[in-house]
Length: 121
Image (cartoon, rainbow, N blue to C red; front, side):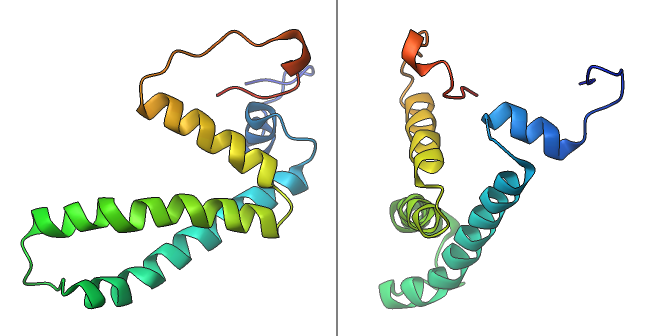
């Protein structure tokens, strides 16, 4: 996308506009939340799978089943937790609502007049 002067926008500006954020610093904080959440999810997988008795010898479909049942929901909770810690809870709460609406196939409502500032992706 090009700005008003015909120059190419940086990826940071594009994310800021797409997510409806106030500053580039807020983009960095949100990226940090995603990084912390992903790192924590990877960190908890090994002890959790050991507790469940899942190892490299477990068939891939059982590992996938248990990953979907345990780690995927934990990631969503961790995302809200880190979003709260870094002061971005509202962004991640809305992010999760949109994610689950897409996963469940819900139709998006047109934005109400009072929701004009809330970003849609």
